[in-house]
Length: 530
Image (cartoon, rainbow, N blue to C red; front, side):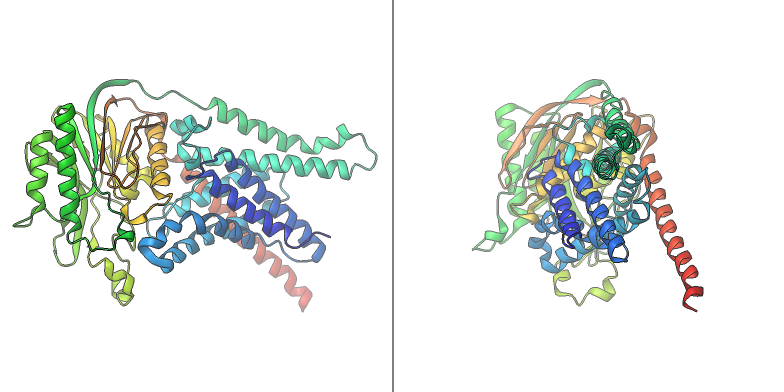
């Protein structure tokens, strides 16, 4: 008799393995163990269900795995959003993984289950990346592989979702090999062991195929052509959650610190080709009459020559709308280009259905809704260098990054600038998890990324995903490097996220299979009951 607690324990262990694979621990080999343990949980519960005459509890096991992963992984949200906001976001992710567990159940007996499981897992990740409310693909397996994994270069061909697909295929195939081999030896009834082990042929073939593809489907990044010298400045060292004295004017303090650090760095090492200030560096509209922040930014831009700075702007209706973006300034406060954030964070930058939810006190922290920018918006530097700008959690969205790089098909962006403000999340794993997203985008696009965070961690990221000059969090600091430029395209930039749409379709077909199967069982059961 199988103990009832074994399957939930395996599912919980799967979630904890996935958690440990990501920063801050970053034990990426455990990402292979996570799908293997989840498959073992489903197989174990299937045996118990057969003995007890019940259905396999796949959705329940998926929910256990999701809870074990995302409750601790997203704990950084408690500081800015409270337990309610954190709980709601965790609940959405748990629901997705409950769906994954439910979808997998009808296919447990299939010999090709490792491949089906890989499509379903990657498909669920792809769906949660776009729904609900813009999606939230945090904690995808691919992000665990940015530091040292041999799988990382495959992202240049099939994107991060290709990594997730291969990891799940390898992990589940390994679990199926162990299961089939154990059952074959146990049930061989005196037959030679080698004959019994023929039952493992297909899962072994899938395991070997996954490993071969993960090794062979790799290409080198495009060649570099030219370079620019970049100075990235971070200007917020205040741990606001520990404050015992009020901060009378945070935007003024931060912009002043950025101006001072920029002046210090330029006095020490000279004027760079481009100075970068992170998101929220100018956190009140500098075009307002009498702005105190505009002269500070103008002074820094005059020193720097060319300054790309994060900025908050008023919308068409100043009382209810705002825009989150970046301005390119030259020789003082002369705006020559801008980028407005395209994919906004619900309940962080705007309130969905505000008329119905305005009564909820925590939402009063967001008195105005941000308005998204329309379409890709490349920025050209004075020397002709084209940059793609990404703001905050836009790093999660592969389509946004790809669109911004390819805004002009004849002249793709040569370098990526990620401007973010991670101050709200305190001393947590969020900055490292966020940095991992920029690392994966660097590999997918084959371009250097300048990841500029207001409170850190800031870093330069090469096309192999390696970090250079990573800063400490909550420090006023600056980093400078000669950043190579890239004109060529990776296969992923050319073909896009084709795999993402294929696995989304696979998940929909599996859901249809599940619904039709249950309907047919009910139809067959109805005459018997009558």
